[in-house]
Length: 278
Image (cartoon, rainbow, N blue to C red; front, top):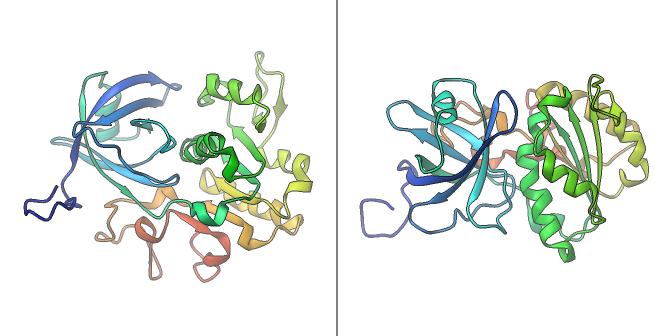
């Protein structure tokens, strides 16, 4: 809360949150579940993010990975600097600062009733998981759910137990691939765009939700263009561009757009005037 009596959140003041679960996803990413010490829920929408802070070190923007239908919230954090390295050393019971949620997230009213096709590359599954699980928890609100998932190699895969449960769930169709062969892998081998022809019939009417490393967008969008997928049906997540989260630092500015406010989720048809966006 802010220092006055208005009852509103102070956008600059982190709230304390406690780690209630933790495990390594792979060599570089850690999963943590958090609950706010206030006892309140975060109140996020799928596609939003939070600013995570460690006292004395700073803060970083992290996508929310859990559905708002569950208590607490999940983050997956790559060890990539001083703040994230400190988080990797933390254990259950330790506390972090949280600001947010921020960003526009997915427009759930626009997506209502539509088939959903998620195209995820590597860590791009992390923010997409929020909407995937939201759709599975509210099947009456959406049509068919399909997930195309590409990962660099077998050992870098995220949420392996959960993905196994998705494969066994008739409510979701999961197609997975890894870039290089592995002795324990019997599935598809190659980049994620190799999976797109397998769902050709779904590409005209479904909402196509894309998230992954920057290089992936170029080739996924080229592949979708070959199938004449309407631009207004494609959504991209530019979650990598945020810093302050509240449109003050200018780090995420593209032309007159601030990604932390108008994004990180964009309808692709809206980005034609922002050539550096993808």
